[in-house]
Image (cartoon, rainbow, N blue to C red):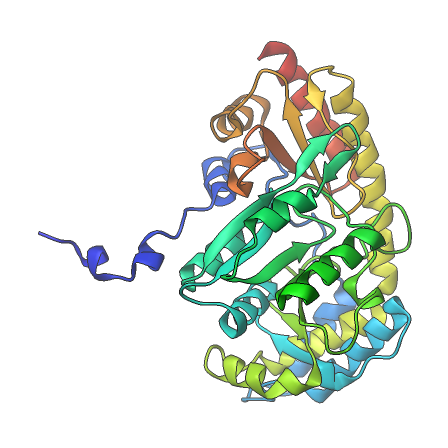
Length: 389
């Protein structure tokens, strides 16, 4: 007899279990474990952000609100982008969403569905491919190459995988998990590639300020024209230590505002107003907090790279951006099995590269957005484990 699950949509039934969550569930309760598996740091949301949310909640801001986001937040988003990207932005370009993940889901709903392909650069954060498949589209990985200088994109491979069914390319730069940060000429080539074929770009530049070779990473915003087919998805989670708040944004051409307002209405009907007030405080008063996070992350990155490279068993290239070290270990081909041993025997929580798709199988991901001394201890534990393994 068929079970209840058999009558669900095939796309829902086939949604993969997260390899990251599986590792977390395995080791979450272990005493003295150093948890470097998730994409978040060890700092709580700054007090000035929490205070803004608390004050709005105490003032009774608990009613339905603007579907596109409260005007104050959309204006703050315009100020933030004008400040960091060196040109004027307008509030009419922004919509507030219930997380960066929802921004991706809405972009996919607007662009792709059954019979469509969406390309993405792999290894990649797994949620995009899973969300695309659940929506009915076919996610197609374009595998990056790993060498002595880091990760690179083979445009010949991209062209070979692009067909008449390709509707969009998802570009995450700086990248989770690899740290790959596209140079200006690479972004320009990607944009021209998409223009010639009428393909949309979904640009995830959430880590643009976590960049270690300059003030910020190069963005499509630096090179695009107003009418280019680009949807920017973003989140408050990383810059301002707000992972648990679940608030993000979309940056789109003003002509698309009504379409995305409708999609928000028929999904979440908007983000709580008191959360949006906290987000305003983050944007307007959080630049110093971001700068301190980036400074600390650079120190922690260098500690992890130095210690692990000294084992002579680890292959890595210091990442240019984001806050992940994606490294391989000589003699380990399947990180999916080994990550549980590392949790149990080294008491360090890593994410398995198998969770990040094609090209990631032999790698491990370490989030180094934590106190440098904790990263030093984690790297030392891994050093000792590698000597025994």
